[in-house]
Length: 281
DNA sequence: AACAATGTTCAGTC
DNA sequence: GGACTGAACATTGT
Image 1 (cartoon, chains in turn cyan, purple, brown):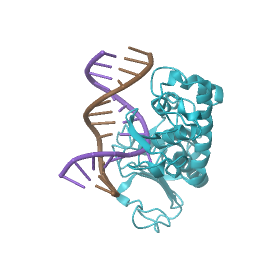
Image 2 (cartoon, helix red, strand yellow; image 1 turned 120 degrees about the vertical axis):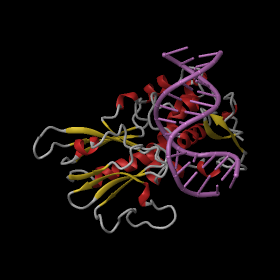
Image 3 (cartoon, protein in one colour; image 1 turned 180 degrees about the horizontal axis):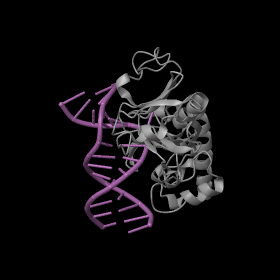
Image 4 (cartoon, chains in turn blue, orange, brown; image 1 turned 30 degrees about the vertical axis):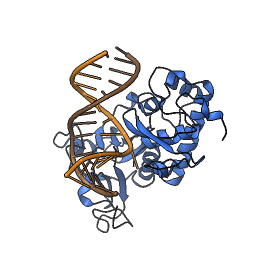
């Protein structure tokens, strides 16, 4: 699930339901997800504290933590990355929802064995990172500065400067979290489709007007994905399969690997040389 | 059974 | 340093 929109939705969940509840137990049960995992490290760092503020940059969430009853000194930041399939579950009642997500059952529902990290609160509730593929990460004091500006906050001018250089394919540049943080594979295809720019176009060969359309595509794709529940609600998502056609013009969707990731684009409107986009059909 | 999957990282190479 | 490739990580779903 997780690209910027899903992560923002998760952050809002934490901010709305998990703050200011005293942490009584820390179940860092998965030494692969909770890294680096030394015995009791997370428990010792977090027990007795509360989550105070939930931040996000790109796909990284981190929570400031409060002091304990013994010491007013704030604790470390708790970093959470959802990886490819992670999701955050926050529940008020421990008994009624053990192992599951509140109000959801059946196919697709989180299974208890996917619980990789759980904070138990004094009031009986919990916060859990559920992640079937175990590519999510929990760690203390994550390196936020390794990330570029957040894709939702980057200014138009910054965006131009970060994007329009080098020989790399523009999609690969959009996926580079150290340049701009938060764009994932689905979102990159959606943004470039909205902007009518080929994903394979060298970043340094973009014209100002191309970068402007990409920037506008980014703003609108982000807003729409957050409002609709995630990156998978984009228009391109529905046609990323053999035989898929462009929702705008009806041409066949092209498929290849760009930036190491599966990539779909409109074969008519997103021409590699950048010339066809303005030819209205 | 083979393959692809919304992510990151690291080694090797040019 | 920049860019590219491939593999690795671990697991599920088609």
